[in-house]
Length: 158
Image (cartoon, rainbow, N blue to C red; front, top):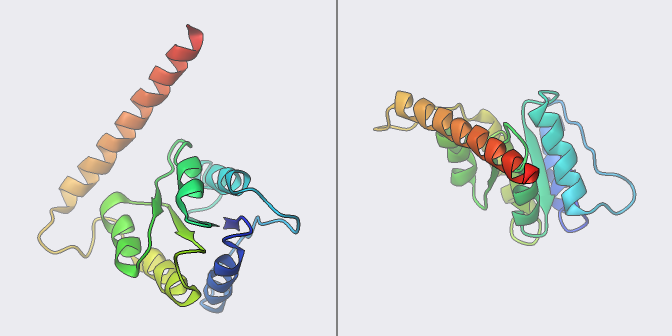
């Protein structure tokens, strides 16, 4: 997990709760003030490279860290502001990073969101929705990601 100064207090609350729950936590937030884009980049690289299964990012609104994290291959960062969207981001979209805003989400709600995110399972627990559809949708999003990477690479050559 990582945070800029605007997300640090929320990050600390979530970190403490997850450690209490027995979750192994790596906090990349440095002692000096860190920009949202550097924190997001470092966490996203760890998830993208498979060093961590999940990530948590915090800034003022959650939007900045979310935008940066989603630039990395294999990262599905969900910006959420309530427990249900945090849970559904895993169930429906197979999100692997949860972004939250310290100016928007209370520590109490942030802890509940983080726990819901980690407890949720992809394509499970959504009545009336075919799990095969969700799996196919996530696969298609991955294909679009590959196409976008290729397209962006080609545009650099011009």
